[in-house]
Image (tube, rainbow, N blue to C red; front, side):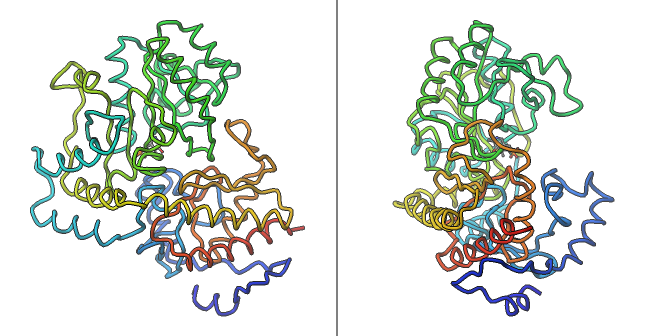
Amino acid sequence: MFETLKKIFKPSAETPAVQTVKPDISREKSAALYSKAKTYFPGGVNSPVRAFKSVYGTPLFIEKGDGCHLWDADGNHFIDFCCSWGPLILGHNHPEVREKVIATMHNGMSFGAPTALENELAELIISNNRFVEKIRFVSSGTEAVMSAIRLARGYTKRNKILKFEGCYHGHTDALLVKAGSGLVTFGETSSAGVPQAFVNETIVIALNDREALTKAFEEFKDQIAVVIIEPIPANNGLLLQDKAYLQFLREICTANGTLLLFDEVISGFRVGFEGAAGYYDIKPDILTYGKIIGGGLPVGCYGSSNEIMSIVSPDGGVYQGGTLSGNPVAMAAGIAQLSVLLQPGFYEELETVTNDFVECIQAYTQKKGYQFGVFKIGSIFWFAFTEKDKISRADEIDPASMEKFKKIHREMLNRGIYFGPSGYEVGFISSAHTPADLDKAKQAIFESLDIVFNEA
Ligand SMILES: *Cc1c(COP(=O)(O)O)cnc(C)c1O
């Protein structure tokens, strides 16, 4: 189907000002799978954003991925910029990751007892990261954050936590909160089923706002166990923070005996092997990782100093465990992926490729006078339908702009470009995106932009 469409619509270097809307890709098989899935799972999915609620059409059921390429159940082909929401920094089905996983599986898949593979992955991480001395593996980002918060409370013997509007930390009860109205507020639950009593322990403020931060520490003096932040907030658009602000945050936490937790589930191993902590050269007290760390299999981890980690069970009184924690197959995938990331020049090259891609799109939209921005850091980028050249708080995103994302998402899919199905989600470049793939993608994105901006 995709092949025939491509023949009919041959992209040319000289993009005409007005594009014709292409017919939607065939989704017959995906639609059938989706209606079946709806009988098994709430909303037909095992994670809400996959349901395509914010974009057109039914979710695509993926059959296969290789490099930066994806194929769905109807045989449509896409260049993938979602990359499983970040983990696949080497692209799909990377030979080294795949072979190491297969080799490991020949020896069995889980023992519930220690294996050398856990040491190997820990060694790779700890010896190449100035910010953690000891870690604990878990099975997801959510679990890493949940455990890290308990650790912070156990260590400080305080209960309150402070988070920022526009940061996502997984689906832990205490963090499913959004800001109320006012500079410093207790959160309101953003999910049913979260007791108000939990939410009363969570303070929510806006990002990049020193006044709110200062006020929160005055109001809750000696009560805040931990401040949790995505140092590179990338789950609600890409809300880049000023380094000076992050430094200020570090200092105010230290001055108040509050721990600083960098949730690097998305930024860890992405903007560099040492993540955002290394990128900004700011040392948090606790870090959480996920996504990239498992090479596409479910792994999370939290880490800190020897001293703080010494209170985690069985050494100390903060309980945390997991039946499948440190699973050998998942460890193997992580070892293989992180080993590639440690090769000299890996991040520099990925960043150069991303810069070229982003600058080319920016140049095009500037030339055309479109109100559109591409924000980026490392190999993360975000398409924003805005005139602003800086967005660092959640409330600076215009919700109405998401209508435009909805349209461009459809046009891109119809041209073989796969993005996460929401305008609040970022895109990722992997080392598997070749210049030729990216050229193809740019052309398709230009055409899609033309349609969205030239519509009556
Ligand atoms: C993805 C993400 C999480 C949640 O991780 P899961 O593996 O989905 O549970 C937590 N924090 C951040 C910053 C994330 O990007």
